[in-house]
Length: 138
Image 1: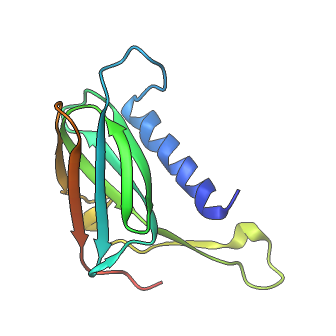
Image 2: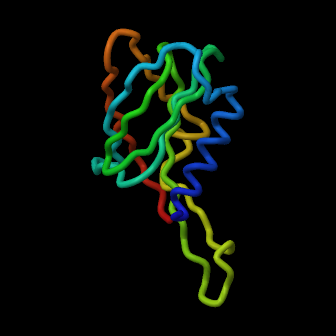
């Protein structure tokens, strides 16, 4: 498992556990959400996106961003959007791998301080584009 896959899995599990999302069936219907994410005009190479129900119902849903594209399933309604793109900086030579540093490339206003919103339609596919500005330097 790559460092990114591990970080993505842990992050997504944390978001879903905090929001009360369950992995079982029998919940509300899920609808397809597809889209594009750019950062300073370029497709975001790799990252993750989370849609968190604004009203507390419906939990959180997330997916991977690859080459600027994503597709996921989510409940309908207004969602808070959080986008992340962690960059793992290898540990210095001779240091254990767990000494690697993880940096976030996306400014906080698109993740932990996000005000991005998206309404997921309950009639078909929701398509959207997020044009992010202000890449942080590693």
